[in-house]
Image 1 (cartoon, rainbow, N blue to C red):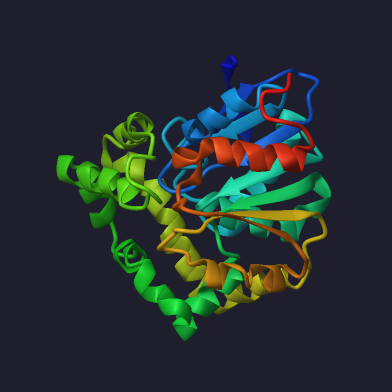
Image 2 (cartoon, rainbow, N blue to C red):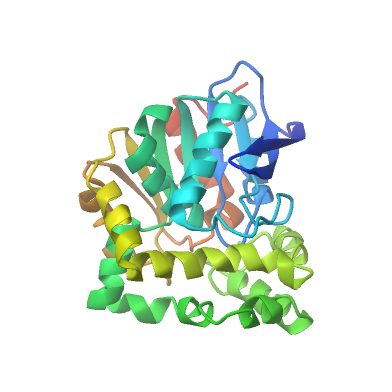
Length: 300
């Protein structure tokens, strides 16, 4: 069942955000935070499969569709963006659904602002503290599974290369190579996502996320601030939905996330599914979210 999707532009935390919105005005709100290098459209399948939910799907700071501020790509500002979006959209006590980089922000947001949401759902993103520790200790070969992170630390070159014709082909390949089973990825949607990165400025913000998180880990003052955030346990129910064929973020490491979040959680493995659950197993993902939201997919 298809559902109408409206498009809004809102000012929040000093930036302009494009937000796709679907579902009845009076339905319980769900805020979906996308990963790298996606955008609001990565949630389109869910919007159609969950027409009974009021779903909000923004393009994050620095992504095509939203504005490109010169700064603010650190996790403190990015989680403040989510807070500001919740306030300007009037959706306190929403369910926060997050994937990949959005998942990292979801974990951190719940440490900082649990009172603003009713539940946290994380899709294939290890808790940031767990991931950093795994990189340092080489737990399940974690540093070798994310080789793009060092490359992204180089100034200017990565965003230039990734927006060339060759770079966009490589970007598409990085989606397809990470599907759990051949032929399951929505290739047309991947093409739509990749096409948005037409010029260097379109990719600068998304890559800047990686530069700023490395600086936050390395710079003493920012490191202390980040680890101070971790000291506050997450106090809302947490569900982690995991495509078990994720080669970049292994389940063995990810399952340790609840300890670093300071809470118990519901672990929901999806056999045979890769990293981009929203792009290859959206029906399974919709079913898991419907369970969290306490209704069946397709209910209206």
